Image (cartoon, rainbow, N blue to C red; front, side, top):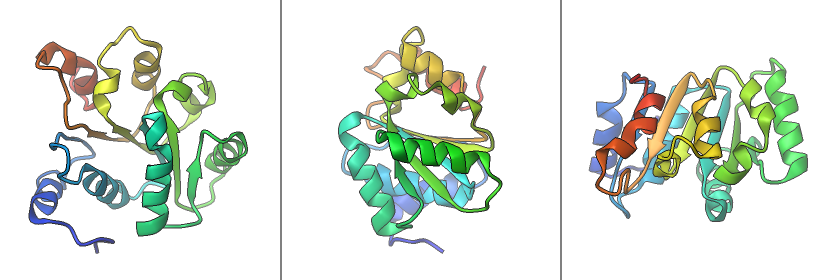
Length: 173
């Protein structure tokens, strides 16, 4: 059951990727990537979920999940106390849903994220990892998620070779 009422194009995107645990939603601005991505994340039904986005979007993602899905299990990982609690809970076998939201610049500074297992990784504006030599890209590519959701309205600047790092996350080596 969907937590929100989706538009036809959003539902079609989810239907087309239903059997996949690694997918990209490259939808133009205003077409609702946030809802498509969050619905996919919820359908994948993993206990641990990591959403990586731009710094300015962290509060928006936290609010989105709290408003439309769950209030108690969403963590702003830019806040040290919430980050610590998230990591402690991730290490436990408690079956509670956890959604952690962090910005790209903090991911590679929080090396303990590499210890996460059996989790879903969602990248908002996944084009931000197109430079494979950047610290954030190397770090994200070094994670070991079971599921991957990529979101972007502009996955490349017209240069398809810049999709390489995103394709790697989708399982294309």
